[in-house]
Image 1 (tube, rainbow, N blue to C red):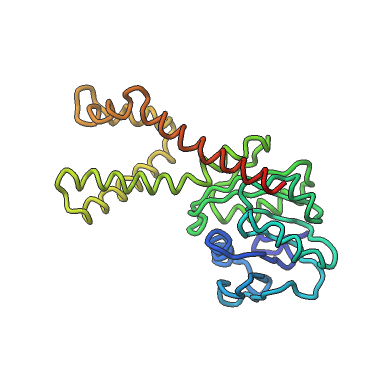
Image 2: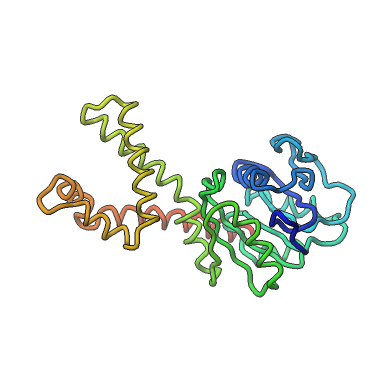
Length: 272
């Protein structure tokens, strides 16, 4: 596959679909040095591609690209299969960000030298995302190529057991939505105590930002950090007693992730 100076695998990159996540990934790659002229985006509308990227509404009459990424909704997998059926040859690497669509379902529909499932989350847009990767038995060249795409997006990890992929998707893929909801709830709680709503929102977001950076840089767990902040008999401890009562917060988040995990499994079953 080969690697040019800027670190991305050599050869064309085609994206089938370019929605919120696919578009965020592509814009981040371009900001990190990917040549937009090497990219083709294929969508039903022909819109949404960044400047300098070729945008089409149908498969071009060309040989298969080095890398093909499926960046559409999982419910559109059959439409993608029909679109790609006439493709000349097969890509060296197929990247799929279709939530809930397992490797077997992908391999049964698409030809490629290697297939890698990737589950990014939305902060990839600013290079602070989390991308989970899975492939069974791909070559070192293919895994290196997948990592070259994942690296500019932020933190990435390989998942050893695909059975865990739905749980990983629920935690990291869906996680930003839950964090945003928590930030909104924190702000609304501040407003309920009498703060102006806009001020409460700013304080909540800034508090989350600083706390997340501190947790990422710490050499101890978030649980220990929480206990360090909460002095016995103090105001933080009094508030944390509410969150800790009957493990209420852990129970709520476990239920939240379980719901997302179930939905991922349902989508996987539908894709099969």
